[in-house]
Amino acid sequence: MDKNAPVGVFDSGVGGLTVAREIMRQLPGERIIYFGDTARLPYGSKSRDTVIRYSRQIIRFLRTRDVKAIVIACNTASSYALETVQAEADIPVIGVINAGARTAVCATRNGKIGVIGTEGTIGSGIYTEVMRGMRPDIKVYGKSCPLFVPLVEEGLLHDSVTDEIASRYLSELKGKYIDTLVLGCTHYPLLRSTLRRLMGEEVTLVNPAYETALELKKLLEQKNLSRQGACLLEEEKYQFFVSDLAEKFTSFATAILPGQVKETKKIAIEEY
Ligand code: DGL
Image 1: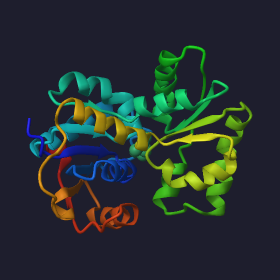
Image 2: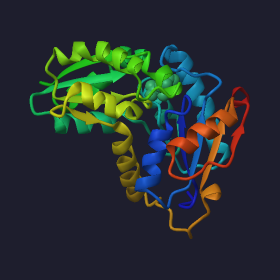
Image 3: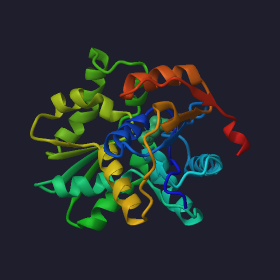
Image 4: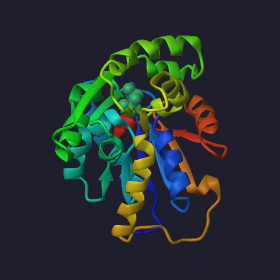
């Protein structure tokens, strides 16, 4: 396997850019091929079978770009498809659930953890399963927050509508006296300041994106796959692909990522 090959990162759309951003920060030498499935999002309300089928197609596409490892940046796809695609792939594939779960289990003092995510992620029960596997006495309270994704996509990050919806979603979790909250969806780190204000300083917010980048770093080191090559220009280093609305993606990506995104290519993902 070529150490200088890129890492493939994929999500249902723009949300996974929060994971790509962390990889760029923590592994500045690595090349990234990002795919956002903008034609078929949201994944959060789709069935397991559909999300597995989509994930397989995306992995086939990423393999055509010779990636050396794949990060499933989407919580819903990690919940439904990670195990299946890991068993099929001949390169390392990681998701975002384990890293987030591990951090939450280490962070909690009272053993009560909240998880917010899409209907798919919360319905799958995966965070509970993984966290209980790590510490059986832990209490996990899941809450799906389906309106957060469209609010973020509309750019309503600091808005009274978002505040109102967030306080309704979070009131249930506040009543459980959780001391740790996992932001179990790619879009939620973008609502961090609202969530922080509503939950209070004493609740630790866990962003799986940060931990996933750390996990990727360790994985590449262990497998002797860390990139050694010379520095590259941004446009050579990071390439972006979507299944629809390439221009909209480019502006969103430029707003989220540290550097300017010059180009996003649209591909026909159903052909893979
Ligand atoms: N990327 C998805 C996740 O992290 C959120 C958006 C969607 O539902 O597709 O679960």
